[in-house]
Image (cartoon, rainbow over all chains, first blue to last red; front, side):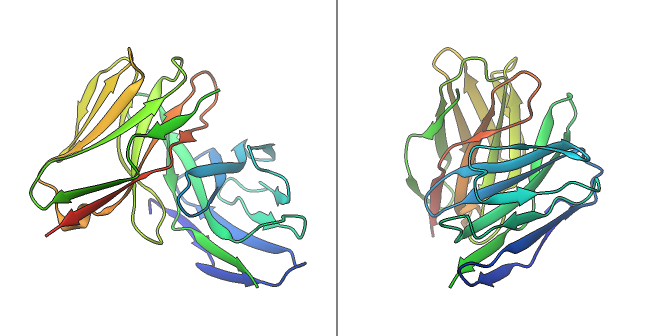
Length: 115
Length: 113
C-alpha cells in the first residue's frame, strides 16, 4: 500500500461516541486525503490537506474533523454528529510521478461499524 | 463540475481473454486520469495513469486509451488472469492547481476460469 498505514483495520463504535482513525505515511508527501466508500459507490472526499497545519473540507465534511500537525500524519475523527458513519474509510497521500503530476496512493482502509 | 461514470457495473470475462473497462467523464478541462484496482476489503491500488496530452499509454499487460473528443477513457487488460478480479475505478483530475480527484463508481471485473 505504498507506505501508507491506517489503523485500526476494523473499528466498532457505539452511537454517540467520537472515534479517531489513524493515517500515517512515510512517502514524504505534502498532500493527504480522507475518503469515504459505501457499497457500490465511488469514493467521496471528506477532507484534504495540501500542507502541514492546513486542511480543507471536501464534499462530505459534515460530522467529521481532521488535524494536520505533522507532515506524515492526518487523523480523522468521526463525531457523533455524523448521521450514518458506518463505511469503509480510505486515506491517501499524493506525490509526483515522473512527468510532474501528483498521483494519489491509498492506504489499506479502516472499516467503521456503528453498533 | 466533474462527474465520472462507468458504462458497465460488472464485466465477466474468460481467463486468457482481453478485458476492456470503459469510463466517461464530463469536464473537458480534466487533464489527468488514473485507473485504480481495488480488491475486496483493500485500498485502491494505482494501475496506470495518462495525461490529457496523450491518447494512449501502455504498462505491463494494461493499456489506457483516452479520447478527449468524446470524453472517454478505457482500460484494456491483456490475457486476463484470475488475479485481475477486482473492482476497477477511473478517476479524473479537474485541472488547475488542485490535486483533487473525481472517482467513478467502479466496474467489477469477474474472471471465469
